[in-house]
Length: 298
Ligand code: GDP
View 1 (spheres, helix red, strand yellow):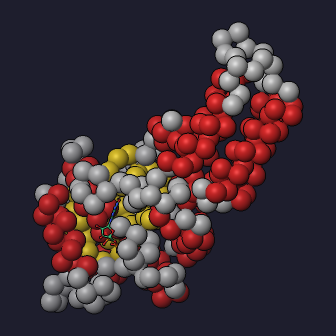
View 2 (cartoon, helix red, strand yellow):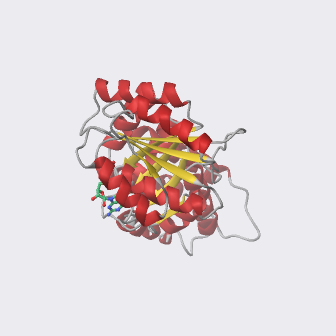
């Protein structure tokens, strides 16, 4: 996903190699190049602005270092600032004091929520949790079935509506699922919710109703990193309509320009917690800002 950006940044920074002390003009020229590379990668403008301002300020104020030459120092600053816009520390899952921990997934249709539900369930089951997947996407005809297939692959049970058991009412299904989790000793519940093709009020209201009914410990906003700048506006709409505590980036295996991934933390203030990079259950990882920054800087 970050190939072009990565190539651009590496070559801009390479130009500094072999220079002695960097003049302010050198730093300004480098920052101009970095700015163009970020904008071409679809990074949101406010994020680019604050990123460049930080780099400029730090690079111009940098003490002469014994250990690093000026070029290495700029690379170090760019790396640190990339880590910062990606969230700094790896953010761990917030677990309920009294189980079950409830994780609700929200996002547009096609973002990869159902797939992610299975990946997350498998990941958490591997950490000695006993998750229960909950099918609250009752809009898309095949969604319940798709979650059941995903659950089977992940080896995690799925709570789905049955006749007399919340059919057609995702809020009722969510409530019943929490009761079921308590009864059957599941320490964790992952609630898949419906997404529409675009943001709409009905979708937001339904997601907010589910949220109110289950009082989640985490609401994860699942977003397709391929949708570029739209990711930022979608995230803002979900933050206002439902509110979320963490972000999951999906489709990082795609060949889009990656700006969404670089913007969403800074724009929403919420951390990126997980990353999905393929269709298979194992194409998934906890998101580490430092590793992502290193990957971008090559
Ligand atoms: P939902 O509508 O949000 O539940 O999205 P789905 O989980 O049904 O995913 C939509 C499509 O994206 C499916 O074809 C998935 O196989 C695919 N998908 C999900 N995550 C990824 C990913 O990380 N990489 C790729 N390449 N495809 C993905």
